[in-house]
Length: 212
Image: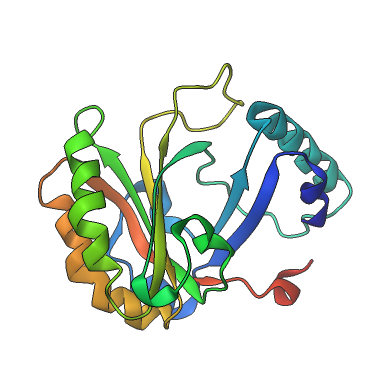
């Protein structure tokens, strides 16, 4: 919603949708997140905690004013820290700006560590996995986020269990590109350092079509 950009820490907001054929191209889907149909992603800068508090309060105000005419069940909400950022060589941009580059959709990957923090696995992602993944045509870049213990307080209802979320930004057809990436994505789980919770394509929202 446009009003959210009045908050000091809101840097960028994105939304992606899984419908139609997207529901049948998932590489993993377990638990409540198997019902994912919409994903909303905000990049937040300082003051982080104040922004989250203001964000929750603004959401209540907008809801009371009828700005959310379609009520969807909330499957998960969390505040994560950016851990890694990478870009595809053919994207011709720096890794720091990948989410701001127009893209047709994403491959969303949600994972949980099986035993504490997976430092060796994260290093493997950085050194081997992402260079191979982002050499694939149709990819633009990838950002990986992880749970943070740096909160003085966590808003009620927010997830605080450890989790990794990777967003692979796609400038090719999301369904075709996800199929091409599938063997590489499945390599992430062979070491059993993490378990997959969700992995699947979503299309980029067309703003005007989604306006209430």
